[in-house]
Length: 263
Image (tube, helix red, strand yellow):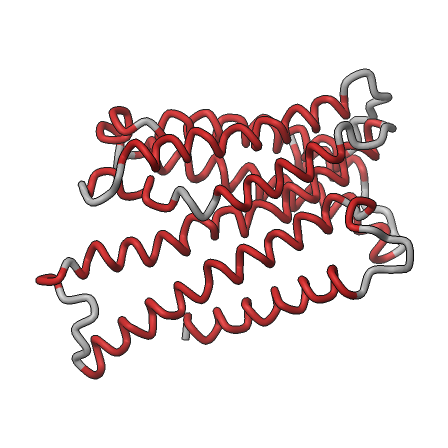
């Protein structure tokens, strides 16, 4: 079931990529596109890299269970192979979740700062870098297994914090000396910045193997995960709902209730 639902995701990403590459309006070059569209494009690319691996691993697991295929035999290091295949999907999946929400924040902040996005090209480059690096860090979930090259995966995990930091500079630079309007979408966007900062800082700590060995399988990892996912999905989603709902429906949401929801 999971494998076949993965096919739906893969085909959906092909649709998005084809639409963005081939069906832009006349004069809409790649570097005139909204940041949100860039994020959707790179999310689609990550789906094409990650989901086929998950589907293959799931089919191999089904072959083991139903037909005795011995792909993941413990005697052959099968448990470690499963982890590698799962996390090669699992870590890009975090960015598959996060990138569209980064795009939402990149649309909301300029509107409520009354300024164009600061450093458009840098923001695009940072997004491309995050997408590229996200497929090189999967084994940082596996430090304690003893089956990974710690210096490489630690370095790449530290490195992925750099383009993420660049994005923060872009967002804060857009707000800097802007005519800020703290309406509900902007409040959720600022909440995203604060919450995701905690997720990023705990991630940098976990990137260090000596620290990771001590806190692996602890609530520290749970907290890191939830700061990252709650910070992106929940805060950015509510920001996007309040921002785009009037455009979807032609009706404004109640600002007072929106602020009560936030606080």
